[in-house]
Image (cartoon, rainbow, N blue to C red):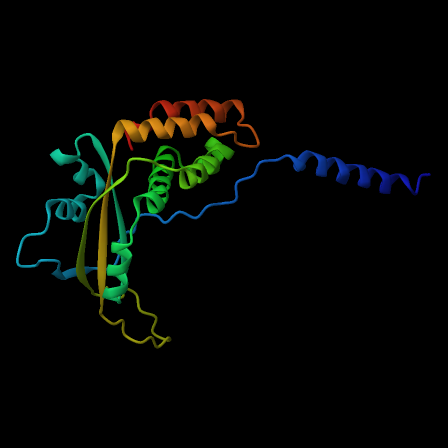
Length: 232
């Protein structure tokens, strides 16, 4: 009996563990493309309809990001999103922009901006919000968002200039960095603020994260819900 007891205990623990996880609702990590930070110095060498000034939304986005675009009068009551794609094949990028679908492509833009908002609030959102953090991003990426409108597209061409290496390693021979050219396509999307907020609140109401948040996590989740659009 003594020899069989440890095996019985191990079997019981494993069986109980299976029972505890059978009904568990899990959310695999969803990779959302972050906003692209351009660390490489670059200059714009060409752009669409270059005989005319750039559209104001493009100039604003290049100089200050989404916030600058949303400050324009036409978007006073809208959130705007810019989808960006870059590469060396102009025709492929043009086809990407022409085939952009607000119904199919907007959810991931919304999820990325929601994720950025959560990350802005706290240094460790996984810890601060628990399973709610992952669940919210996944729900937002899968939700059938309604009301997003494709406003405009624009392209430009950049020449990237490699930065000089500050501390070269003397004993390692490295080929010199080369300048490169790339096409950059932008797609502008807008959605009414109240309509977006209404849909997001529905997502909030439908989320049932597992494991359930702790008392501290529940308090943090409540705070971020109440203040969500202050820094959105």
